[in-house]
Image (cartoon, rainbow, N blue to C red; front, side, top):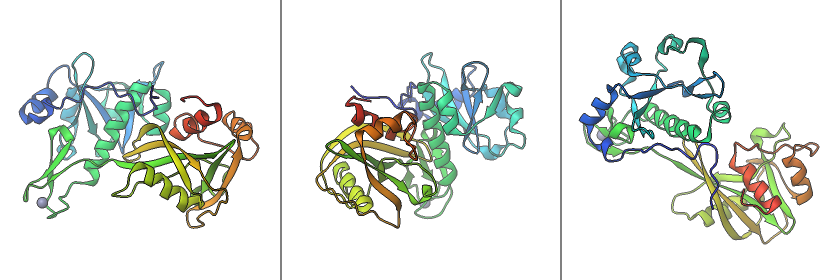
Length: 308
Ligand SMILES: [Zn+2]
C-alpha cells in the first residue's frame, strides 16, 4: 500500500489523446463546460467560503485577459468530463476583476492553500503550478534562441524555427531518513542555521545515478555516513517549482558524523524517544516538518514502524 501525500492524488484524466489534437483543444476552451483555474504570480485563486477549494472560473473571463497571456494550459478532464485548464493571469492589472467571486476568493500562496483544500485538489494545484512556471521560464528554444510555441495543451513547446521539441522538466530529489538501530539522523541546512528546524537529509539526483546511489552519495556528502540498505517509502510532487521528492529509509553502516560546513549547519543523531516527542512538537529546541512534507511521514513511519 502506498501513501498519498499532499500535492499527489490528482484525479484529473490528463487526456493524452485529446491534447494531441490542437483544433480540439481550441474548441474545448470555448465549450460552456470548460473550467479555468487562474494563477497570479504562481499563486492559485482559492475560494474561501466554507471549506476552501480551488476557484474555477468560466471562459467568459478569458476575453478580458491581455492576449500576451497566451492559451490556457490543458490540465485534463474532471469526473464529469469537463475540460479543465490553468491560466496565468500575472499580467492582469487588477486580478480581482477576473472572477465574479469578489471578496470570497483570493490568490493564495501554494503551500498555505494546499493545507486548506482537499488532497485531490492539491494535486491539481501541483500540476498547474509547475506547468505554468515551466512555460513562463522556457519561452525560448535552448538550441537556437527562437521563441517556441506551446503545444499539446502545454505538455510540450516546439521551436518555431528549428522545430526542436522541449518537454516540461521534473527535478527528482532524493530525501531520506537515515537510521541505525534506535537512532536516526536529522540535519539543519545553512539556510535554517538560526532556527530550531531539523529535517531529513535531501538533495537533487545527479544524472546517470540510481535512486540508491543518489541516497548514498547525498548522505555521504552531508553527513559523512556510509549507507547500506536503502528502502523506498513513497514519493511526493513538490511544485516549487517542479520537484519530485523520492522518499527513502537509509540504514547507516557507520556512526561518526562529519557534516559538510558548506551546506549544513548541524547534523546529529536523535533517539527514537526524542523523535516521538518532536513529532508531537514537545522536544525542546527542535522543530521538524509538518504533515504537508514527505519528511514528516518518513520520520513518523520509522518512529512508529508504520507505513505513514
Ligand atoms: Zn530552435
